[in-house]
Image 1 (cartoon, helix red, strand yellow):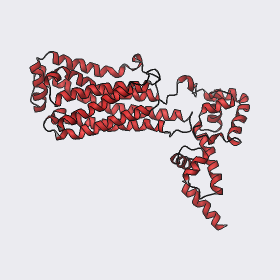
Image 2 (cartoon, one colour; image 1 turned 30 degrees about the vertical axis):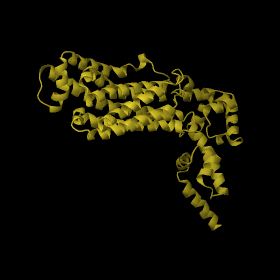
Image 3 (spheres, rainbow, N blue to C red; image 1 turned 45 degrees about the vertical axis):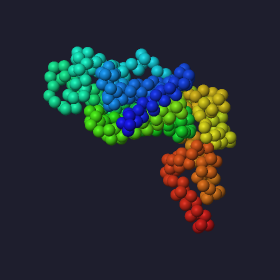
Image 4 (tube, one colour; image 1 turned 60 degrees about the vertical axis):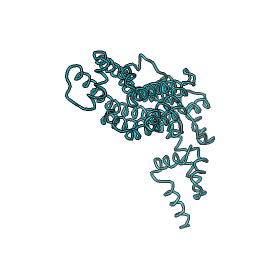
Length: 387
């Protein structure tokens, strides 16, 4: 009974999210729809996993090559999902097919080996020859080499796609800072938590790959660790993914902070004076920065200009990005408040100055003032005490 429960846990979890994530309209929720497909592949993987360990050899004979394929598809599919959250507007086979080539080639090579065996030979290879690690020859040697190659590829995939995912998330954060001020919103932070789950699943996957699934045939209790941890991680991925929205800045919206920006600024500078005045008026007189969800598009709509002009002014005249530009005004306003009341708590200070959270306030204060809020308050109190 314990063995059955452990084997069914990841099947239930992935089936639940495969159904739930496909409920959203595909044309408006491309990342969720693709994560749903990821969950379908994970469901089929663990279903195959179930037939191996329960065991149901008659069924596993037909699923073994697919088990190999599904395991090799997980990392590239998860990476594509991260891209859909950060880089790509939608899934396109002509753009994303290269990520599937290696899994498909190994699937064909492994499947060919199975076709060249009888059913009895194949099941003997899976349940006896591989676990015993005896010397093999002929078709058994070929199949063993493809099996080991698939394991190596699985491990390398985990490392490569983890690196690529981190790179896309960092690039996305850098881009977002040119458009948003609240770069630590739950929507953006969820992407980091999603990638963290990839780290854990990668580590568990690599560990299991080195141990080999044959090890878990010997004892039911060994299945407890991978079953529970993978079930929790997969549920976390589904939960975070169901709440996550894409934070993609399209090429059309970016419009060009390019290598030619300095030339653009030089040629446009004489025409930017009215925009510059309106921009400063918004920040100095109207304190538009107190809107915690302020975006670059809010500024452009208010002034009645385009994003390029505002970015050129901020990037060239203030030598910073939009997020830092806004936060400088917020920090200066925070300092004004602290001068009048140094006992104010940080939560109230964050709310009054337009920061989305205390953490964002503290981080920005440290970056801009090169000191903590606590130290700044202490300096004010010290000066007040001397007076």
